[in-house]
Image (cartoon, rainbow, N blue to C red; front, top):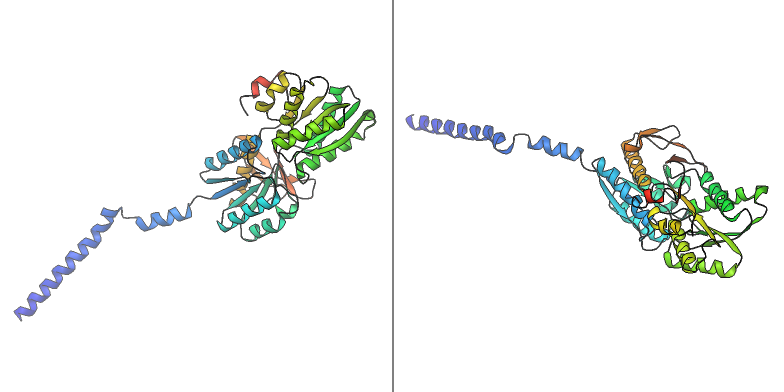
Length: 354
């Protein structure tokens, strides 16, 4: 009997020790380990990707910088991508890689209006938010487009500019990016529409050339325009790479005042050509703000704040509230603002900004 009582006392002591250890464990490890892990999982960082047209493009670099700033302001991760060449095939490969990585969103400056539809549709079917910015796709390939400015105003204002520069008469040419770039093509269509006005009867659009947003090819295309059309009076380059290349050629050939240049350019790259008179004035918007707006739109779509439908509104950080509107191609878009004129009076204020 005494032996049995001793055994029972030992068992009680052992159980007491284990109970005491289990009760003291939370104090040693923080006590809330499991709930903290669960909280971390629900608050995991979203991954938002942006793909520009190609590497080595200052406009694209600034746009991706703005996108990254917005995403990081929101506490998430930005993935920046750009192929070596501005082709749809190169972008398709990158999109497929991002689908495999199961990113939350893809923002794309498209190299082709239709060719990207199959891969972008696959991305959306797998729950990935897809939007475009700068250069868009067809409406079925995106949820919304982030537009830098009204395409009609962009096209018309450049014709108005070259008209003033050349005195309303003479041959003009356009130096574009790629022949498949939707934004470039839309602006050029509006240029042609503006040229139908009788006031332009003494102006002739002799060629639309394509430099593919590559510096060397844009230089070659500018040189070819000057050789093919010795009476050329004006060049419109609605691409930052193209206008800088044309400015270099016109400067090297000493054609200031003979062949006038306007279009869309980065102040940092065009300041020298505005100052030397090759380009009297040109236009652009802020590519940093364009990317920034794209970042906030990506987040709003992933969060479900907007769906991309007309009338949706969302907060875009320091840009304020933005609204989704109907786009000219039947889809929807968010507008950044009007094109801004850069000339000799203000270029010094902007050339160190972007």
